[in-house]
Length: 420
Image 1 (tube, helix red, strand yellow):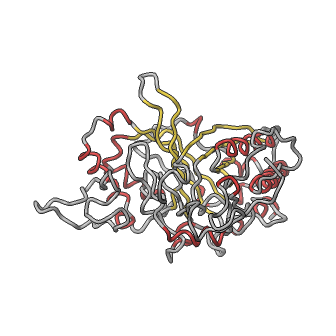
Image 2 (cartoon, one colour):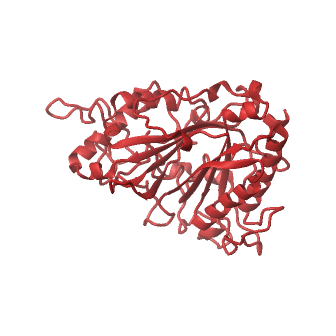
Image 3 (cartoon, one colour):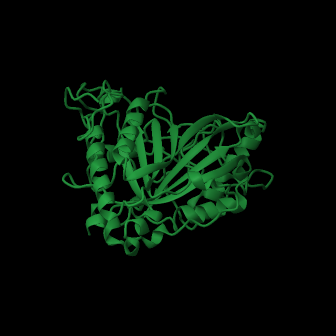
């Protein structure tokens, strides 16, 4: 990465302030849109090194250090690299701490567009700015015993229950450590993930890696919710930081347990393959009734616009429910799940074609919540029992990770756990 000049920064305050501007990652299946609204380059209210038009796309940066880790509440970028690592034999608590120190220092440097310390740069992203790079680290349940930390494992990190629709490949599930790298430039995202993998040699090895994409900023004339690979506008009902209960749903409180998770969150990662050939054979009407929204504009079948709250009680003139009883938006709604909600950051993926010629494509589902047992688990259980969309998707991998709070400027992610 270039180090020629300082990069303009998008502060967390500005990022959170932008949240009220529009919709974001939404349905329980996943999220095709931004986790928060991203101001377009032509937004006269945006400021930066380039003047009133705001910073150039590559120059935008997100601070690595802070109360919470970056990559949770910030606007979704267009590229994702998600990787799980397993500790190599003999890597105990001291080795894990050393690895997190190296990773945190490298992530902080790359978030500013600088070359990571202690490593010869491969120059893959030499000409690029930080491109809103975020790096987020999480701990899988299996790492605690390996690092001699079994007594400090959070109760919320208990194994996820089995769901009827799961067809999980265990080789592509779970892991000791989880790393989420997001950026608006695919080369920047690849370079960051490759850098972290190089820094892990000798102490951790990749278990699995998946790459996703979302709509690029500026691809539409105005900021709007993205579409998933089913062609549905996907990402309207996500919790927003302006909601009074946002922090309680997404972030572990300072008084929470264990104490080292204060300011953190729990991430669920799922690879969900979409049966696109089967889906494309369905009529537009059936597709809309399966989701519960109009395909052309994302408005609920109960009426209004995309952002109109879904009226689950509304009936058609013939007395039938406007939003069918098994429609995805009804089954996934907080009102149908005793208020359960989570912050979703989902990315599409396409890994070529399967032996039968069908696309190996779908959604890399990521969600964050203060407690998975009151967020993801009850919603997924409800979906497994009665979601019309379940006929068109297959859940192929899964993982649950404790994502600790952010690092201080002179510290590293996970320091309270590893040195506490």
